[in-house]
Amino acid sequence: MTHQDTDHGTAPALACADAGAALFHRIVAGAHDGIVVQDMDARIEWVNPACERLYGWTLADMHGRKPQEFVLPPEVRPTAEDIARFRYDPDSALFRRYQLGRHIRRDGSTFWNQQGFALIASGPDPRDRRVVITCRDVTDQVSTEMALRQVQVDLRHAAHHDDLTGLANRKRLAEHLDAPDIRAEIARGRLGVLVIDIDKFKDINDTLGHGAGDRTLAHVAHALARVAGPRDLACRTGGDEFLLVCALPDGAAALDARAGEVLCALGQPLMWRDQTIRIGASIGACAAGDGATTGEEMIQCADAALYDAKARGRGRMIHYTANLGRAQRARQTLARDLREAVSHDQFTIHLQPQLSLADGRICGCEALIRWNHPQRGLLAPAAFLDAADGLGLLADIDYRSMTMALDALRALDEAGYPDLTMSINVSAAILADVNYPGLLDWALQSRGLNPGRICIEVLETTILDGSGADVMSAVARLKRLGVRVALDDFGTGYAGLSHMASFEVDAIKLDRSMIARLEQDPRNRVIVRAIIRLCGLLRMSVVAEGVETEAQRAMLRRANCPVIQGYGLARPMPLDALIGWLRTRAAAPGPGPANTPTATARPVPAPGRAR
Image 1: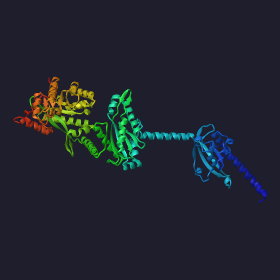
Image 2 (image 1 turned 90 degrees about the horizontal axis):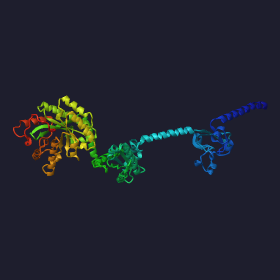
Image 3 (image 1 turned 45 degrees about the vertical axis):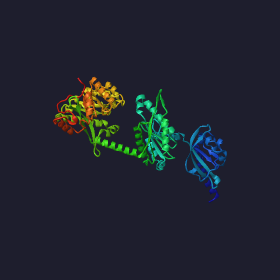
Image 4 (image 1 turned 180 degrees about the vertical axis):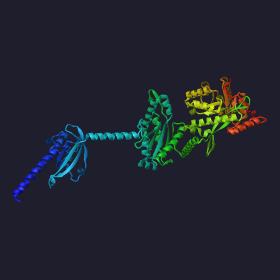
């Protein structure tokens, strides 16, 4: 090949190279992303127009300078010495990933800059290396992502915290107790739980309104937050119940001090619309190792202690003990068995006769609920009614008792005793049911029973529970139905005489505690005689409960008490036994049991208002 041939071939190649460079220059210059070319010391050699628009600086302004001098905000800008020492490391991970940073423009505004770094070589000499940087303003994308992250943070906070108080909720509590470090603290016996319940919170809501109730909850939350240590967790677990998980680095003794701090903080009065709200609280406490090996077990134990604190009069802290644990398990077993009893109809009634002292005849009986427990045998109401009330089962039991009592009265009719009355005990739960009078009416009609033979007994203490107006309304509905109403356990409340004037009742039942003192307490005899005389003036009957001795019976007869019942006459018994007892008395040739006059099946007027 000749030199001429070589020259002839080289010219087109150079022309193509020049054309390629020109095309590359136009592409780079027209790119939307900023492009910067630096040497290995990070000095700027060239920028494209997009980069000039991005920063607000011209190529002439930037040429020969290191970008750290003017693109980084002052608060994160390195020192002049560090900038001068900077040089690119060819092996740096910088060239293998994007970088995101906050940069500043010439006008002082900031933006988020996404940068990519590439190392290129224009020749074999290391000095021929250049760094090419692409720059893109991603402020909108970053702002959107940050907003989404904040939404996620807010949602997570909402999912783990109570809206009203801002304290941790049950979900956050469960996560906290399941954390490995917390489980380790429990194992070392360095964790405690306080379960806090606001005393009589319902009264605050009912008397001052839900606004005051919410403010009270917030006040308690604020107090707990003040008391809580840096490693504690304060929670609202529902309603008016709060919980404090306490770190106890010095052992369980510190739990008492923390509970005292809580009670002290809650003792500060709260002002609400010129009203002073004094907040009391009951606290159940459990430290790790007190029979509990997990967070959930600690809460259960603290709940048992709280139950005991409230039972002892509230406003105090009780530590969990083994005895409390046994009592809690007994309550849990009773609750389970009660639900089973309601669903499997394990209840029955026993009937206790009532004697008319005026003529010595059996005039009626009281239906008393019993539970045929599969393991424990026949249980009296005192063993289960309070628990049934707490479980919301009392109304179900009352309805079952009503049905069995009316069936028993119908059976007594068929056995030849058509004029006996039946007294049925009812709770506040059933009185609050507006459907109760209608259901009772239907039950009476379906059995062909006269409503006047039924006496509904309402506990005097039911009135003192703050539902007096509701009880009065219920009594009025029952009386319109034609049944009689008696005030039961009269004398156990604080304002028994006032109830006689407030309620349109047909009879009162003197509590057995008053009858038991008749023989030993002269003042009590005067009170009983006065009540009987007053009831006579008010055209009300009186039934004396718990009559056990002949002396008590004689005193009541002299006081003109209309009706008695008690062990001195007969114990409560099943229906079949009552029918047999009635027939035995009717057939007896002389005085009946316990020196009572003989009873027969002859019709006897039911105790009620005198005509």
